[in-house]
Length: 311
Image (cartoon, rainbow, N blue to C red; front, top):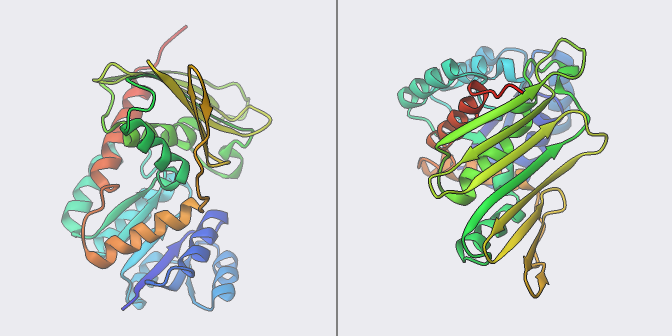
């Protein structure tokens, strides 16, 4: 039997979730929900499914196995609570929660529900990240020493109603990538943040410094100021380095005497992420990229935001 899935949030990314679910053989998209009836109806008409403006109504009327939640960050936890309390498996888009209090409540909800829970950490399913992890595990650059990550672009999410800063929007991606490829979380994290745009919102520039138990030091730079989007990272070892371009899905291996670029088969990361989610909902097994992983990543991010540097 296919996994019966609904999507909450019919904006551009919720629409992408709906599109991808329709391509997964083990999934059946049965409903969409948005507080805007116009948005919900529009998406429902494309895929010939039911539409709702209330998550409560949708849960009551549909026999759901799983739900993807792709709403604005300040509303993520409220919707997640409704879905988990109904015992329905849940995938929540990043940043998952916006503070430690919500994270603590979410942990209790996940444990009580017994449902499969997964964070929407999409870059983990980028083929370039999978290749990066393999090359690091194989010791291609020797002992890893330092990481420099940059994720920037001029699209303040505050302009579309997101009541968060750039850290919860962009830095969270680099945090979970580093946790995933290294298999450890940092001991110490500090940040420097700034509000440079006079729009009354959260920070639009941030730097994070982290130190890991292995001795690796990482720097993450994020902002909503750079004219063109950049998503890249440099992993430096004592025998070489790895340069990752996330949008291009490329990894370049730089050694003292040569440079190599492994052939990577391109794939839409969202396809990999949602297939992984459906697979675990069907089996009932907790995913490796599940709540415990998300908790470690978010603890690191909140640690950094709580330890702000003052220049």
